[in-house]
Amino acid sequence: MYHASYTGHPLLFYRPAGTSRGELIRKDCWFLKISTEDGKTGLGEVSFVPGLSVGDPHDLEINLDHICKLINRGEMSLQQVLPAVPGIQFALETARIDLERGGRRILFPSEFTRGREGIPTNGLIWMGDPAYMLEQIRSKLETGFRGLKMKVGAISPDDELGLLRRIRSEYDQARLEIRLDANGAWTPEEAPVRMAALAKFNIHSIEQPIPAGRREDMSRLCVGTAIPVALDEELIGVSDRLERKKMLMEIMPAYIIIKPGLLGGFSHAREWIDLAGELDCGVWDFYSVMGGLNSIWVWNRFGLANRDHIHFTRKGYELQGDLFFNAFLKSYDNFIDRVYMD
Image 1 (cartoon, one colour):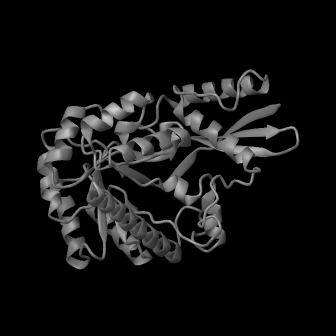
Image 2 (cartoon, rainbow, N blue to C red):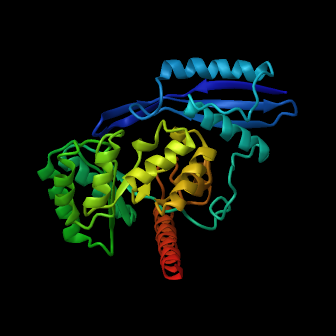
Image 3 (cartoon, rainbow, N blue to C red):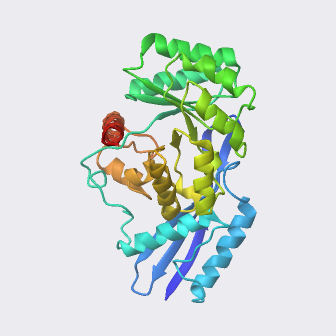
């Protein structure tokens, strides 16, 4: 017999985080707790991202309360599939895995959770006025990042190009990888023009240049532009496996961005990864590599994350960059091997 409960915990931003969809000042989340009669507990997070997550916070909490009651009455299994509420599905799956692993908050043991390896990630640059964005860029580079992901689509094209020009004047492609994230900011007509102007700065990839749901237009962008395209928002809400495969075959992106908390859990994320592998789309599952829920505490314990449990230390960033670089080269080598074997 299981007992389920939840606790709301809104996260308030110290400084508004700008994207092309507007500024984020608050992020609602809930923690689902599943307990057994012998005292073990599993935790799962329901993360809600405005403009991305399915549904709205009020309905989500109503559904979460209802699901807890069903579990407490023994009327719902922890294996239950909940395609209509992917955020709750993720929390339920995470809490179940945590219980199965002894309630230690280590879902996927790895060299990282054992403190032997780091995990590469990008230094995220939020939108704002050019001075603020440049301040963020300087801070990330001084911290030791070898890759930046810059939000684009909200400030003027000239300001964006000016920032990239300043970065590339000091850091060439060999020293710094740059990724962009448009969050669907551009129309299908303006996206090729904007991307062509950005391509001269040796951009690794761009996430979601146009809004989700424009598959034919997105497919043309994937084929006809100089910057490889990564799908992000496009994946959210697509729960049927055949429909997922159809979408990837129609668009043929260079990469897909896996966010288990928005896609319905690790099982759904794995399905996307398997489909991408079949179609040769690149995937980097940062959440799983990092160690899963609460892994930031492990990072801190081994000197890889700061005391705020948000930002990493220089050592952590350097290890992450090295690990990502090696993983990328290994993936490329595997691809070349397959090509020659074929």
